[in-house]
Every structure is written in structure tokens, then in C-alpha cells.
Length: 312
Ligand SMILES: NC(=O)c1ccc[n+]([C@@H]2O[C@H](COP(=O)([O-])OP(=O)(O)OC[C@H]3O[C@@H](n4cnc5c(N)ncnc54)[C@H](O)[C@@H]3O)[C@@H](O)[C@H]2O)c1
Image (cartoon, rainbow, N blue to C red; front, side):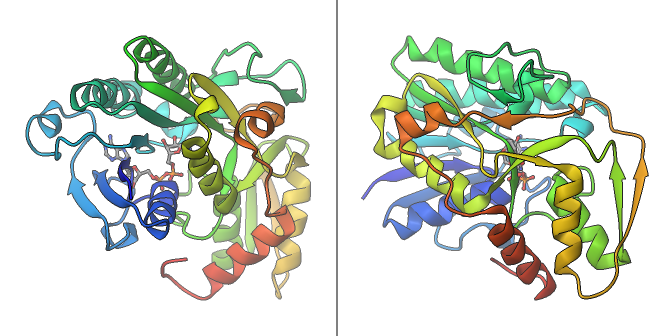
């Protein structure tokens, strides 16, 4: 049995990853400031500390100082659009937090660090499918912060903290925050559709994305722990491959028993036109292949949302 520290444990991805670790019989300690997360989302069997990961006091006697088998840093402000509201907050919450956690890892003798990075580091890609060695020119403060975090990981590699940054593409699925109307294309459209019978698309329907179900993201984090050869790398985690926004909208409309109107408006700051993951490296160093198709994932999420609030 191992012991793991998971940040963002009361959020969409952190809760799912923590649950998967617990299912494997591990012990999990969690940190969350409950800014977007909810206490009841965090697995009850995990020890939860309510705190900001960028707050130095957390590491001076509040968090248990154990040689964790790994730290999984998943906490963060997760919206490119929101990062334009207060870039300094974004830097602190997403990047200073990484630096402090890396230092903590070193201090307590933890030698494995996984990080929830993002496709946002690429900015506007030069090719429809991006590989990890494509130029990283983020177009949002959020993307800059994620890229800086990746560089901190690289520096700490030299001190022996072996890290893997997963560049997650558009994550969706059961358990996603359906009230945050500025993060998550699938969750936003689905929430609008269920609430108003109408989807407002901000930006062109010809844009495209790569949608990855939470189950596959959880598998990818666990695969990092099983594959030490993923240490020292940044790895794309995609799912559906290239899917146009209009295709996503059609798939969602098909799930609704009632008619759904679609309206279009201007795009949001920092949004990129089209991006999808080349998954070759994930396959090679993690044995990763997505298992949930977009149709399956959307159907599951729709069923979860229409059944009412609750854990997935
Ligand atoms: N959802 C996606 O599509 C996606 C894609 C790429 C990367 N990511 C990254 O994955 C991570 C998790 O995203 P999510 O979709 O689960 O979002 P989420 O908002 O559901 O979860 C984030 C959690 O972190 C907590 N948190 C935020 N800042 C914190 C801080 N400074 N200290 C402690 N707790 C803090 C929140 O309260 C929340 O519980 C984020 O770092 C995000 O940038 C998400």
C-alpha cells in the first residue's frame, strides 16, 4: 500500500484520481481550498486539508511530512478565459503552488511528482495534431502559468524529483462542475441545454477540439505511477481525436428528448481555433489508449447530469 498526496481533491479531476488510488488500496491525503471544489466531492476515505497550495504555512507543520510515494498536483484555476480576469491570482494559484509543492516533495523525500498541465501551453498549433515537441506559445495567462510549472518540474528533476506533466486536452465527464459557465466546453453546453433548451456557442462551429473522458484521464495518471519511464517527460493526453464544435453540438442535441436551439456569439479571449493531441508518446511511455468513445462518454455524462446532483 502506498501513500499519496493529491491536490485539488475536491474538484472534478482530483476527486476522480484520488478515488482510483483509494480503490487500489492506497492511502490518500488531499489538499483543496474549495474555491471551485466542494467538500462532499472529495472521497470520504481521504484526509482533507482545506488550504491554498501557494500558502507557505501549509508546508510548515500543517501537511503531514511523509515520504509520499508521489505527489499528484491537480489543484488549480482551470480556465484560460478566467485567467484574464486576474493574471496575478492565476500565477499564484497555478504556478507558485507548483513551485512550493516541488520544494515540499524534495524536503520530505518524495521522489515522484505528477502534474495536471494543459494543451493550453501550445497556443495556436502549426499542425492539426500536436506532438509534445511542438512550439509552446501559450495565448492565455493560464497557459503561460502551466508552461512555467512544467519548467519548474524540469528544474527539480535535477534534484531527483522525477516528474511527469500530463498535457490534458478537453476533459469532460461525470462529476464535472456544471455551474462554472466559463470552463469546460462539454459541461457548459450540456448545462445550457438541460437548463434552457438552448446552446450558446461562443466562437466558430468550425473550431475543433480533442475531448477526453475523465475515466481515461484517471487511467493516465495511474499509468504514470506504473511506468517509471514516463518520468522526466511531458505527455499529451487526448481522447476523441479531432472533433469539430458543430459535431459536438449535434451529438449533445441528439441526447436531448426536447428540441435544442443553437446560437452563435463572439469567441472568448485566448481561445485557440483548433487543437488535437498526437498520442504516440502517451502510447509509448504509458501504454495509454483512450477507452471511452465520445458517444459513450457524452451518454454517461448526460445520464449522470439528468439524474440530479451527486457523486458520479
Ligand atoms: N478540465 C479540463 O479540461 C482540464 C484540462 C487541462 C488541464 N486541467 C487542469 O486539471 C486541474 C484540475 O481541473 P478540474 O477540471 O478538475 O477543475 P476543478 O475546478 O473541478 O478542480 C480544481 C480543484 O482545485 C482546487 N483549487 C484551485 N486552486 C487551488 C489552490 N491554489 N490550492 C488548493 N486548491 C485549489 C479547487 O477548489 C478545485 O477543487 C487544473 O489544474 C486544471 O488546470 C483541466
